[in-house]
Amino acid sequence: MVSRDSRYFLLLNVGHFLDHYFMLIFATVAALTLSAGWGMSYAELLPYGAPGFTAFAVCSLPMGILADRWGRDHMMIVFFIGIGISSILTGFAQTPMQLGAGLLLIGIFGSIYHPVGLAIVTGRWKHTGMRLAVNGVWGNLGVGCAALVTGFMIDLAGWRAAFFIPGIISIFFAFPYLQISRNVEELPPVGGAAATKPADYGPLWRVLICVYMTAVLGSIVFQSTTVALPEIFEERLVGLATTISNTLRSFKLESASIIGALAFLVFAAASLAQLVTGHMLDRWGARPTLALVTIVQTAALLLMPGLTDLAAFAVALGIMLGVFGQVPVSDFLIGTTASKISRSRAFGARYMVSFLAFSGALPLIAVVQSNWGFDGLFYVLMLCAITIFIGSRILLLAPKVEYDQRASQ
Image (cartoon, rainbow, N blue to C red; front, side, top):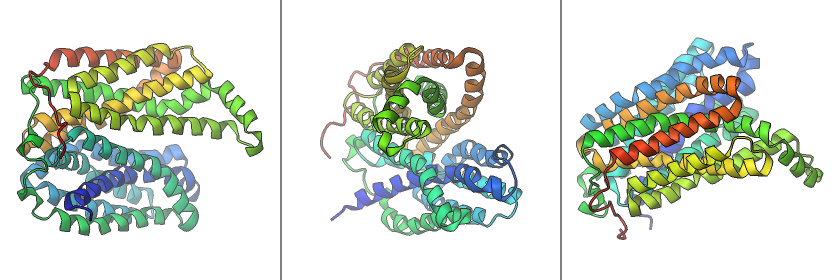
């Protein structure tokens, strides 16, 4: 029989999946159907989604503060119901302004998850690093499934159903979550007091500076690489795509399909790197883990300029392994240093900074690529990785007793 804690963790993971899924429904709807149905170009529609993404970032901190004061499980119920109702209302939109208002609501309620869900994950269980890694993979699945499932729903039932159906599903999940989470905060963390034993990385202010430095620079690297990778492959993997097309000529694959498949393979493999990082965090702690992933990023970014075809594909995989592997580290640092009563607001501040930094990545790509090409972008991102490596070595002291969660639950 599945334990209560396993179901609790599963529902938190479902919440992470839905959070990222809802935030990307609009992108697919706008590209596939609204631009034609409403007589507006894709570029004209995109600004109506901007307030939602801004709210997703800016509201993270106030949602974290509210969760610390009111209760995290209460806020998760609000998340499931609120984002579901917001999605349903968005599906009724008749004008671009109504659509933008619905997307704004989705962004507001979507901002609840990261400061609240991650505070629960890091406060409830042992093996915090692995729990964060598994939770992160569910978020990645939400990103990956958004375009696929939304496109499927559009073909079967129209774009409004793409908002209606996930909205109803989200509201449905609020009921089992309410039942499973009831009075759970009164229970001791799974694994006992050792589950919440903090690692001593030095004064809290130094840890927080490291967290926010990593959040800003890491977010720029993450957003730049994930957004630019398909175009980089389009530019650099022409020969490899041709070879694959000729080898599989019976399938009549076009270059665009092959490039898309290669990018998907890199993203899928790299997202699993979080599981390796999670194991390292539990075994060795944040300082050596962060050093390793930034060294991998730096080395791969240094090698990438000038490469093409198979060599470029292999090194790009190395870049993304380092980029995705870095994601759980900041959350682990917050979860193992922030106090229980202020953990949600700490996560809220971290994600507000991260999501705002995301918005700066697109102009960075445009300016650097137009002037110095992608090779210039690789060098800029390499400097970001080096800064994280050096900064973390200075700011994070080596604990006398490294954080260790190797004991079985």
